[in-house]
Image (cartoon, rainbow, N blue to C red; front, side, top):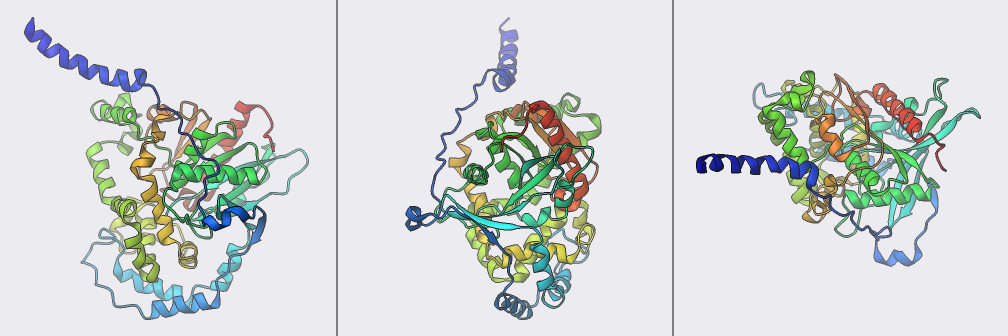
Length: 461
């Protein structure tokens, strides 16, 4: 009998863990947010300008001349090892051709005009001048204009959405609505101001964008996000379920203890967690964690010492190009690591990728963009336990084949119990709106169509 108890008691304890995590454990309290927390210079607080002003992207002659001189005066690069492709990072043999194009062939004036094709604006929110694009389609009288807040991540920018915007804003006889796009630059990214003091993490950015949408006159709207946009959009849906009436994400994840437990259960019994045809997106865990360790080294640096690495990237266009474009290679398709050119021409032209670089270089914003990692991976931000607070907003996820991480619906529903659908595609990677703009837009429009059926009311403007 004692031997039986010796065996049974540990098994009972182990069995109680999932019961506690999945059923009995109470969610943490909703964090108390300061909706007016000031992130700009203190002296401006008493004279804040809340107007909305048109803005135009400008590549000044002085900036372009200095950029070209820096590229011209670069030091020789260490040659790559034989046959490594992009496995050690950006292959230095490829750098010269990219830098030559940037300095001698990239049409700065033409690309400036291209980037200004959509209306740009700035307005001051909580002390920061926030840049955003606002694209309103012309529609017939019987078509409702519906607002969509479109959020980018790192090392991307609003440039990721340019090819998708015509598809997103298109008027169709098959829909009784059309999307108005509001696409802001995250604070510290591109043309949006950076915080002057510590603490501006994903949760606080969510507040800024909620206030931005209120400034623009929206009472209810939809949110779409990938990368940091996914985390910020999820935080907005967590905090503001009355305003967010639908959340679409191409990188939805939850890192709660219950989610981790289910992932490990699936390692033993995959069929309990994931469909057989998708099991290789999550398992074996040893392989997936090995890939993450290989690819997330940058994250540890940026979450701990962003300013140190940022000094070199701010000073060197060659360094900035290599650091950012390596991500556009390996995060698009891991097989591109074995290609000598990193597969960068597979999806994009040089102009498209350098456009994105210019939004970092011309604004000197690489350091401030990376600080979002340090703030959001701080113990203070983790203590909010946002992964353990459910989103009570209809949610739709789009899961690309080569996204850095995958979770099946049974795990996602721990965070998103109102998950309407998970669209699984056999193509695409991390920068999905930039890679496959038509597929991306089609899924977003389909999701919003379903959200509207659930809501069954007109959007309040």
